[in-house]
Length: 525
Image (cartoon, rainbow, N blue to C red; front, side):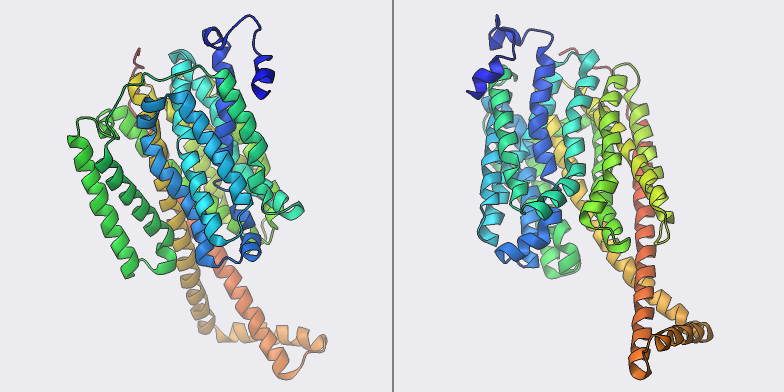
């Protein structure tokens, strides 16, 4: 019935195969794959805000809830690099439909989870379904759009995975507060059904030049082992201790596995991932810029909600609404930048987007508890300039490759950004915790060096408490607690400022890397 309804939207005198030859076909396909891309991107952040209620509801401890978040990333990381082989095997259309169907079904299972173990298993399945969606969608864009319109197509498509992660906290907070944490998973069911029905009706039978290939089993095993252990080390290093035996062994296994993977792939006649793609200087530099994007974007996205909620005392929903205008700006700029890239040098927009992001991030280095809300909103609006980055980066990374290379190359671009994002999250967590501790000690030491001023402040606070009826030891204890709270808050603020400086530098480095990407002429086929 869904297929019949959608068919009525198409010209009545056409069949799906002839419709694929029409000029409007590429726009229908673009809007179709946006549904899946939005869903997979949304679920990278929407779960985070519901963590406290999930823990209470299913009796999960901190270690189990970390696995709920991590297993989704691991599932995606395992599948993304294999998207090229999978699309050659079954075609872009059926790979996309199958992936979105698995994602949708596993989302419902996540909503029905009855224990921490069941939720972890279903989230892993959800990640496996999500892993092939983005690389396949990017490859489809490059197949259905002519070279002179690929920037516009990529810009429109990128609305899905631009809005998804940014809307996640707002939408997740609203659904969790008004309905239940399970609603954030059930939300994917109607959208997933619509996405599958649209893809089955609209997309042509096969958008890839598939050929039978032998599955590179040794390459897959070493790649999977290396990626999983690396992500585990990055995500758990802060909790377990970076010098702990557990993290050291994970790092060793990851290094050896990834080293073996490189050797195997370079020597394989039919590799799982064509690492020779990095011989293309345009693709290699675009991948490096994408690595810096993932590192800076994911790291900043960890810091921002903590800064708004833990430091400035906004609620989760208030913080989400504060970030919403920047999301809208990013959504407006994304398709516009794609269209501009078809006419002008994409490097300029890529560098401009990174520079604007650097300026917005640097603005947070001056903020504290006295910061006016207007200044905060303007900084978050400026942060929306990151929308200039996504379409030009994909354009530069893929436009000099042949059609047969695009599926594998898009998967490699995505997995590089995901792993870099985990690194950014890990670094942000380590720096914030470490610098908070250091500044707290420094502040305490400074107070010890000026005992007269401290005594005056304590005396004034004591008189205020005395006026309120507090006397003796109770008043003294409250004075000490208030001083400790003040010191903790100030040291946390300085720690946030230092972290924002680091990610400002990351975005500046990305802007420089963007200008170093060779222009390159698109290949004809």
